[in-house]
Length: 227
Ligand code: SAH
Image 1 (spheres, protein in one colour):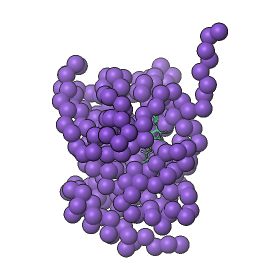
Image 2: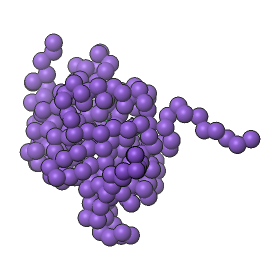
Image 3: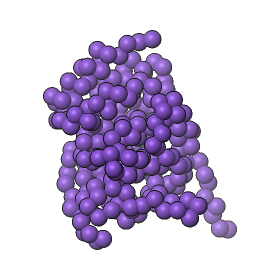
Image 4: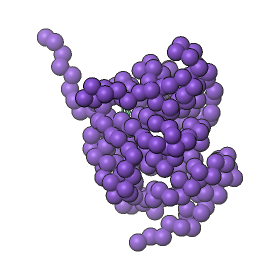
């Protein structure tokens, strides 16, 4: 089995020195989650600790570690927080979050990706992650009559075209923070929204990024069109 410890050390150095990651809890979470396990394509596992995005199937990607670390740091998490993630993908970002907050609720629209991620959570004994295959644009659904919102934090790991979906702002608590990439392909900006009241929020630009798009509906389910 490959030993990733040198690559891991180098990545942590890059995160500290070039990516502006100063939160020791975030760095410790990155160090503790085996990123190679989330890369299912064996040939690419040797690159798992490089600071690059990699393919995870269904045309989707696992984000670059420096972007995962920046988004996580911007959320300013405590172990009391309830976090909603849109775009489970490989499950890597959710695994990092799970080390830093009380509970993670994560939504993925591609069922096969979600099933792989669920296996990983089980293998790594990450018991505070709840998953669902659904359209994350609508927020976390009511299940058996139970609502989970408001969330203290929302993280969207795919890019919305113009603005955060209204349901996600609605499900954020007052004072809560959302980190989300906004923009068209090639012109996306990672933004931090802070909800100040039911209908006001402040916005700050974090950095330019490249994410796959936030898409509506669950993948592979054909819509019934009335004749
Ligand atoms: N956080 C992931 C990154 C995955 S890429 C990781 O750590 O690996 C973004 C993911 O968002 C893709 O898997 C894509 O299928 C998913 N996605 C896009 N639109 C979505 C939506 N409306 N609801 C849920 N997931 C969505």
